[in-house]
Length: 275
Ligand SMILES: [Zn+2]
Image 1 (spheres, rainbow, N blue to C red):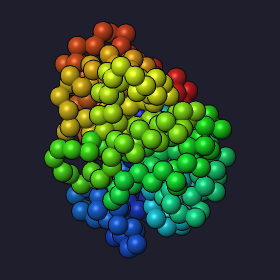
Image 2: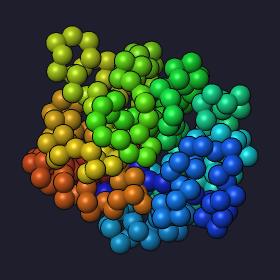
Image 3: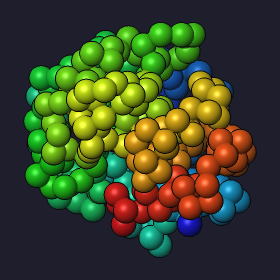
Image 4: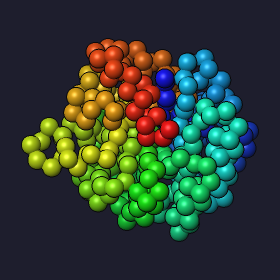
């Protein structure tokens, strides 16, 4: 069972004319103004899943600044899930500081979306105040919240935000009941579970995904995440169409996980989180 817990799809309107969506959307423009930045719709993703042997994918939304864009995208995620023959799970997305964010997030969970994601602050640190009601909503609904995180040090790349592990750790501590999936190996926060006090227990309700991992870490990072948090806490996520799942499978093989650990990472852990 292969589950890809981090993929991006966009509505056909965005695919047809991405330039019409750039104005007033700095984060979208920063990542997708380049016509070479690949984009897919639901059927395009399912085709890639068939080619790559992926059974189920989580398709995430984008943190649009404008409500009309968020609604269009979230409605499309619902549609794509409904017509996917069980192959897709959708995560609705909002721009957390927006006045409409909580109502739209609630609407997403009332539709057939399985959680929220990929919530992101691409040009600032995480805003704890605006994330709080969204974390609470997900805790009450018992659905996961997938959050963009990245390492606070190291080389720069598009989409790398100036976030800090101090703020991320505060978010985790404040929302122990929320199932938090931290994208991109959680910015490395799992390494601190080696500390003798507190951190390991604080990460009880935290999962990591491998999205963009081959650009960021050597395969040993996956082995360490599995060792520190357990194999049921590391989710294969490809960030497709950024990278194909096969690339992650190659790297995970080099991590020397036990076969049953690899099975968890490749799909069983994600299936447990969103059946
Ligand atoms: Zn991300």
